[in-house]
Length: 165
Length: 152
Image (cartoon, rainbow over all chains, first blue to last red; front, side):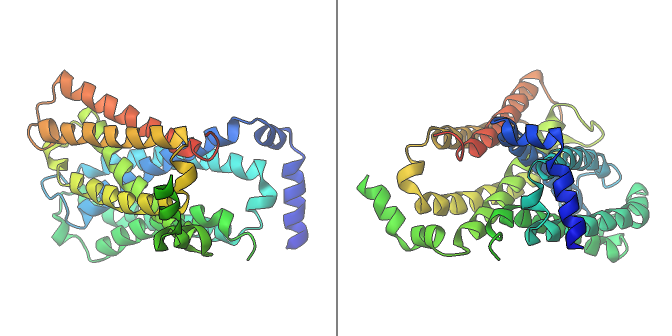
């Protein structure tokens, strides 16, 4: 496992892209700004959708609120790209970091949670069911979505501070 | 200047600057508050700018309280972070500009909520202009917040 990890790190470090990310003085801060804006889009749109599922803002048509999911996808795409560039640039920092791998694990869980939402909850919302008439798992999915992404943000912030553990 | 050193020597200042987990915990709260405040503000401005016309603008008014919750969280966590490094942050131009931008962004979004989101589904071009300026202000505030560590 460790040799595989070292091979990945060495391979990434030897790429021209990695060298470019780490030597250009403006690129890394620029990517950080982009990553922060992406997380605001992602979390903001999930607040709108998940709180509506939980019964907040009842005047908002529940069959339409999924329009805002689009901005979660845009934010996620922005952060997938900027995040991948962080890892390519500084792989020996990220790929050995516990907070980073826990964050990646939670993103996978959040993705599975979203898949469940799309298959089981969204069809009920499309029929215009009031939030109190949704099946009980809807509330669990909405809370999980908010909690998982909040933890993803927290773990991302912790990455530089768990390096000596 | 003495005041700034006094803040750094206060209980909050020392917890942020000199304990193992004080800084990352408060920093994480600050990131959650930012995602809540700016995230919700962006969604409100996006709607006023014309996205999702099948959703009445006024039906989104309750979310403004959520954004204010994010602001309170960041006023507290931001004050704590400031105490941890007051004597440097106070003279940091990126920090100064960011603080101004945050309060401008908050005032503009507040105004947008008062004259449009809470009041009418008829979005005027003045409403859209205000939404666009508020949106840009939030994005630039985040840019200057990130710059604090790079540019003083």
